Image (cartoon, rainbow over all chains, first blue to last red; front, side):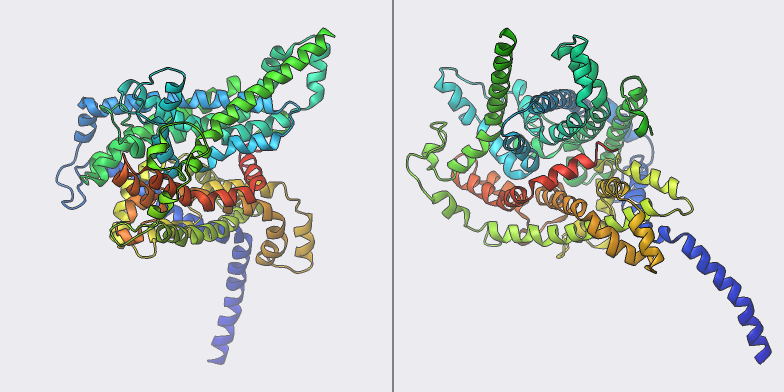
Length: 312
Length: 285
């Protein structure tokens, strides 16, 4: 009996030792384990199930009765949904370039020896911090309503301003402006990148007779392309998913001119509880977004310059 | 001489641009503040910032409760009752995850890191529907403790912060850690005693961003909070706008302004941390 126990102990020891060693070697895994568990439950599982839902007529309270491509068929034949995709594209293609250009332009000016840089930076940055809040959407409505701040100001100089939010030809642009107004975060990133460019490069270029414009396009812009790329991708991701602005300010109107796809997804998922249909629209949006992100990533090698020491 | 003149002109142009853009950026906010002190007749009658006659009606009416269940202060209390746990959990779980990825080799590390990065590009809009179904099964919808908003942050669900912290950790030299290891510190002690103190600025940035984003969050509470007495400020502000549009603008703007005061205060107290945080996530990437 006693002999048996001791031999078991001898055998157990190397096993336990090995276990301990494996544990020690892979201890990093235990630090990331909570994230991995959360990823599986709150990210991967929903991600896959939404793909599956998209091929069903899943209704939150009635469950599934049909399986097939009907949601996708409906999406491509529905004028309303196709229009919403169109509006989403328009929204992204107006806001992203405008935001990048303005933020880079302002960062470029701020990078000169400017007195009160911090004051300006703060002024430009505040809207990005608060811009996502409902309070600012309310303010936007107050500024652009028919007798709002902007039209009062225009009346002051004798112009009768249009009905910004109830005229379909302007409403989307006003919603876009809310996002462009929040260019501060992109600007802060650009400014940091500009500050990182060695001054001797400019001096050398100036000696060679390059003017300001030439310097900007031949030195500044190439060197900050990694940051341009980063801003481009993050802004694209955000723009395609915009919800708060149109939902709060215009409710998608007038005449669906500000109905972004995210609004339709919200309506079908949480007003009529058509989870299948909503998932199909969400997946289509996801595919569109992935294509654009992929284009950005693949085109990187033609226009993004990574310096050698960073080359990854 | 000519060169000098051109320089002066250029400088002036720069300042003019900066000031004009600055005014466009800030004027709406200043106007909002002043409008809360104006009477409803006066708000849209001019663009000036100084009220002809200061009135506190907007604020008085802003205190009114909505359907007897909720008022602005209660809704703000609701907001911060999930924002603060979210901030704490996010910082904690993100630091632990970032530590695991940046300081250890283990099986499948590179693959998992790629997964982590790819979640940065996973749009929330794809996840909303199935997450709602999942939380519905858990019985978390309209939870008293805002479980759908808080629980995922325990698992470092906002990978942006993990990514940001990994970027910061890369720049921390490993010498101190090695010395601590020789002195007999285990991995957890190294994290707490060596890494955390050096990572403090980055942790502050994470906390601040999560604070702002969660306070502003509208979609989350819109989906998961149903009982009026549990509404956070973002929903309350939206409701008070819907109820009043057309006549009671000083009240609506006062409610809005009150709701963003904590965010403004936090921002002004900690501006530099924001700038540090936002640039660390991008430039070194």
